[in-house]
Image 1 (tube, rainbow, N blue to C red):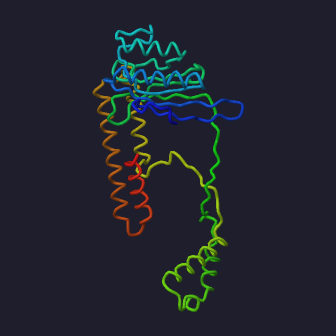
Image 2 (image 1 turned 90 degrees about the vertical axis):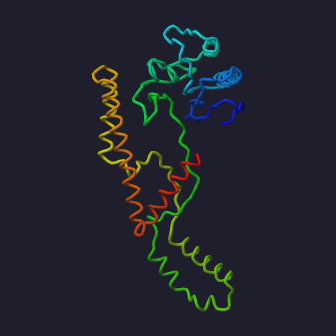
Image 3 (image 1 turned 120 degrees about the vertical axis):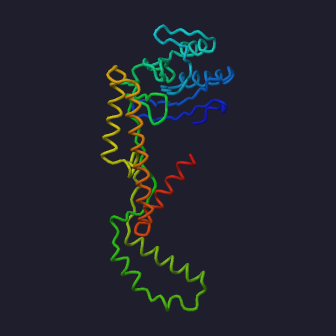
Length: 288
């Protein structure tokens, strides 16, 4: 959703609520440590505008290490201006534990305190020095029905398709036609047969599909890494022991990804579709 101020590193999405419940504006924000005051002011205007119009939840790396959230005080002028913005817009800050070192840099803001619950600060991802923040938004989103229709090959009658295509006297039908005319006739005939034998269905939007390299062993290692983080936070492991568990897990993930790519490359002759699907997914990731 475009709210202007392209200099601000923020992204806003409106989550449509179910009947009798309002929409929620969800935002993510990054504030570089060296950000100038003019950009801070532009973001404050976004917050003011959006928090007054609807329910709001914004998550981001705000980079105000000097703020003490227990007393709601700060040492620096820009940090105090941010606290004033939060107060003026009646926003609640939900993160209580440190998210990078001893500082609370990553925040979750909302204009309805009861909207955000079960917030947890968890283990970091990969090489990131910031901890993960997990929380629940207590609001049901409206489920959009897909309007895109695709061919349902699982219910296709391929025997009937072969029969229809096989009955066509191709030599007689294509005799005397140019290449372009022959192609148009072939295409039209095939599409008509396809329409009779392959039903349509609405495209199923599937999210969170597990990657091929993520096997049971890796899931087990990720669980150990998560448990090591909790033990470190409780003082049951040293930081070096936690880092060692993280390095071992990361190494196994890299190896699993490499083995999966080798498997795809060596099996390309027998399964080209899976190989090119993987290549396509990697290209999409880079484009984003």
